[in-house]
Image (cartoon, rainbow, N blue to C red; front, side, top):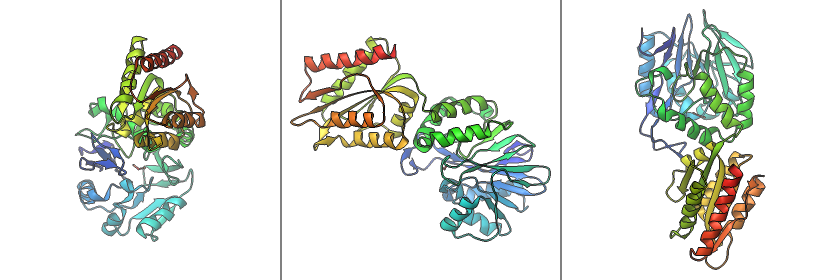
Length: 394
Ligand code: FEO
């Protein structure tokens, strides 16, 4: 028994990345990330996806350890983003007879990224490939999270190789299966991963969930994070909720503040919310907050309150950055309120409310706009805003 054999004849050959600071150059990795790849060893040998190029050497060693000199017959490419495809060219040099399997979009991208055009096999929706005792069936899952994405299902062992779907940030520290790992941080990391990476693609994720709903699945092998066995229902439930943009009761207060005046408003609103019985409150000062954690919380909670000073006659830049990320993800509904400040001419509050209205969100109460410094009258308006939000939650 190999220690990386996760099911008979199926081996985990992925790697952990604890050195990258930001995934896609954007999103923090406090727990690192794994790039998962799987070998299916039968009469024929298939490798499902590869890893980030920086880990190609370690990846080759993992494969060698399992194959002991056997060849790879097929490389199945479920997803072309470089964290899963970049070791392909190195792999092809090592296994020149290996046939690369993908759909038409995949093969076009393989040519575009790596200049590979030979010894490829183009497959379509529902087609399958026999490895001997096992079969690999292919289902297209476009825009989860690129247009070429597909998933691969092995019916004999009821294993779904799901590409990014059901993935999460976080390295696999020893264990590979969910039953071998302490999962505590993975649940938050799954929401953060979804919000940052897949968050724009709710409808395609819903379509994929419907399409895969008929499959009998005993194991989900995603390209990131644990292999799911025991917790399959929970993981599908999380992806289902997030892709419907459904959130739980709770308030995110996200604000910018240069000298603390707008922050004072945020603190007062939070205190009053708590006094009204709201306990799930997350405050983010956007100058120092981890943007990926803010997005995670906005996907988790159903109410968002945004505050901004007016800066150069516009929104505070970090607030603008958050709003643009929300718009890009097309979050269709949140309960909403706004506050902000200005010194000589107000602009920020109007911009925030305009954005919420463009998104079709429910604006719960008039925004609070503070001229210059914090005062008893501003405090009272903040209390009123918080009370309106709390009353609506009840
Ligand atoms: Fe993990 Fe879309 O790549």
